[in-house]
Image (cartoon, rainbow, N blue to C red; front, side, top):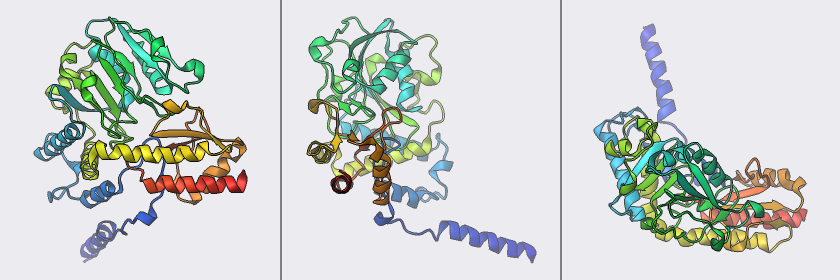
Amino acid sequence: MLFEQHARYILRLFRSATLCQPEVSVMSRVFNFCAGPAAMPEPVLLRAQEEFLSWGKRGSSVLEMSHRSDEFVQIARHAEQGLRDLMHIPENYKILLLQGGASAQFAFIPMNILGGKRTADYISTGIWSEKAIEEARNYCDVNVTATGAADGFTRIPDREQWKLNPNAAYVHYTPNETVNGVEFHWIPETGDVPLVADMSSTILSRPIDVSKFGLIYAGAQKNIGPSGIAVVIVREDLIGRPLPQTPRPFDYAVQVKDASLYNTPPTFGWYLIDLVFDWLRQQGGPEAMGPINARKAAKLYQVIDASDFYSNAVAAECRSWMNIPFRLADPRLDPVFLKQAAENNMVNLNGFRSVGGMRASIYNAVPEAAVDALCAFMRDFEKRHG
C-alpha cells in the first residue's frame, strides 16, 4: 500500500512537471540585444519545447539521442543541407559543425590550411581579429597587413595601405567586429591567396558569394543557434595538409571523412541549428533578411546621429549592421539607462566589458519591433535626462 501511494505521488510530480507547463507568450519575453549568446527565434524555442521530451514520436529527447543513431544523422544531414541551400554553397566546399566556437578556429585554421607555408596575412580591425592574430602566432609567422589600431579601431584601413604577401598561405579578416562595431561592406580581393573570414556576426544576415572565399567560419551563438558550436565552410583543395602536431579531432580532413561526427558533437545545439535553418527558410533566407537588417540598423543610427546626447565613433562607411555601440554624453547615466531599459523589457544593452558604453546587437532573431522600441526609449530617455 505504501509503495502504491509513493508511486502515485511520483506520477503526480511527473505530470505537473511535464504536462502542465504554462504556455509561453510573446508578452512574457523581453527584447534581447545580447551580442552572444544572442536572441533565438521564438518559433524555434517553442518547437524545441514541444519536442523536448519526445523527438519524432520516439519517446526520448534529442539530448538522450546517440550521435551515431539514424535519427540524429537525419537531423545532422538536414541541417547541413539547410545551410548549403540558404547560402548557395558550391559543391566543392565542405561544411563542418565543430565544437569550441569561433575562438577554437583561431588555432584550427593555421593547423589545417598553412599547406606547408610559414606565413599568413591578417587584417586587424578590432578585438576579435587581434585575438585571431595572437593565436595564429603559435603556429606561423603572422604578417599584419593592415591595422586600424591607430584610429582606435573605428574604421577599416584604406585598401591602398595593405601590404599583402603574394606567397602567404591565406589572408584572414573579420568582416564584422562584434565589440568595435566596424564592418566590411565589401569583400577583399586577394588574388590566388585564399581568403579566410570570421563571419560569426554576419553569416546569414544577407546574401554572400561563398565562391570568393577559401574558408568561412562562424560561432553559432549569434545568427545560427546556441553557443558551443562553430560552422566551418572550407574549399576542398585546402583540406588534407595539417601540421604534424594537429590532434585528429582538430583535423578538417578527419572531420570531413566522418561528417563532423568523429567525436561526440554538441547534439542538442546541432538540433537547434537545424530548427533555425528551417525558420530562416520560412523568412525567405538571407535574401529577405538583408533588407530587414539594413533597415533595423538605419533606424538606430538615425536616433544616434540626430542627437548630441548619444554618439557612435565608427566611420559612417564602416558601421556595422549587426552590432551598434554607442555612448551617452554623460557616462554617469549609463547605469540609469540600463536599469530603465530593463524595466521596459529591453536587456543586454551594456557594452563589452573592456570597452564600456552601450551596445545593441540586432541579429536576425531580433525583430524590427525591438529596434523600434529601443529607438522610442532612447528618444524618451534623452528628453528626461538630456
